[in-house]
Image (cartoon, rainbow, N blue to C red; front, side, top):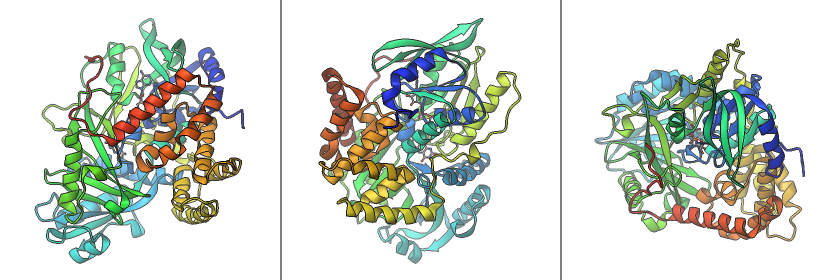
Length: 558
Ligand SMILES: Cc1cc2nc3c(=O)[nH]c(=O)nc-3n(C[C@H](O)[C@H](O)[C@H](O)COP(=O)(O)OP(=O)(O)OC[C@H]3O[C@@H](n4cnc5c(N)ncnc54)[C@H](O)[C@@H]3O)c2cc1C
């Protein structure tokens, strides 16, 4: 084992000691895509940076999105050209930085009678979209006839269909993108700690100089000091602004989005479809590995931010949406394998519904010097980070060095491009089949780990007494603990491997072996193991059940 891995959960006590003793240039509260993006930008420009995350990296909104790196067609409808341009350009950059994680995906937007978009509107809209986003070559949008649209996707409603727009976006794994950002930031000198909750801000002369936090693994407390504190707390940004007594003016508005996952054979789409639903909204249906997922809803939310669940009405809404676009597909609740629900931290605007609110990010600087960032998109994380780090330098009275993240790959030994990813998938598929695994795992390994797959396959060989499926999960658990700060069963099954959403049937098969390995690596006692098992059972329950209403927060925050 590489004891020097800076992201090893085994080295946690030593990492905490270093963080306590250091005075940082920058503390980032929150290890979502925004916080991890800020950490990479800051560390690569020379700021001594630490990220403190109350649960796990990406445990907030950054593992619950639609998992698209997209230019945001809907923002065109809101005439937000600047946002379309920024997210559109960023798509291509993030794809280059992590080709195995940000994969090109052709999407079909069917044009239907009475739908949101007509032929000319769509044609002009998609052309503007291509121009703003700098799309070229084969990726440029193509308008297709009804016959062509049906050839692309035979499940569409022939009666209602008029044609379609066929255009290019990118698909990702939000939680993996976040963890790779965190790992890369750490390689550039940042420090990172999960399960470390910021409780209070520390002040000197009414200026914030650090934070008081709790190590949630043993409830010990510690102080961390820095010249600047940035809150990238996502849905919790206002909770932290409240601690700073600076919650004035603009506030967050939380909107819940649910996704349902069905086996691919139940909704066997060939491409991603972005389709009209009866209430005038648009929904995605996205094929991915063994499943198709459908989402999302968009409803205002006042429940528990730490346990967001799908309700019966969320499920009915998405099932009806599928029925309206693909009438030959009969989905019922029993067909749903898994679900996830997340919160959009949007900025409140009087009189607007959740769907109408801007997805633009906002930065708030408090009189105490606390900088908060909220809103925005996964897709725009790099630019958001750049704006924050520029501001941090200015606030510290230093000249602003050039941002470097456009050129920093997000994995060691990155795969060259999308074509090389395709070729590598084929190679790995053959190798995993030889090892006794389903070919699916070849696709899964490459699109989850990129070239880090090699390390996993090598490790898998050392678990000769386990079945191939268990040996693979054990190799992933070893990798997750020693290289990606896996500290819990939840970290492993939800965010590092995505198994809870995309391969839920594998969990009962590998659960015991993975638990035993985590007990061994992380020295859990019986009480801790029970807590871990209970939490995983709860997650499995929530991913497969539908509630009457939202769960209420234990304590209502003002
Ligand atoms: C349903 C849905 C679909 C979406 N689809 C897309 C999409 O397809 N493409 C796209 O580009 N964007 C999409 N988005 C938006 C995108 O997911 C978010 O903009 C992004 O993930 C927000 O990241 P964040 O880091 O700001 O917040 P989060 O990921 O929520 O991170 C904030 C972190 O702060 C931590 N934290 C909070 N308080 C504390 C504290 N006191 N101490 C320590 N840590 C703390 C939390 O635990 C959390 O991990 C979607 C969002 C939703 C909800």
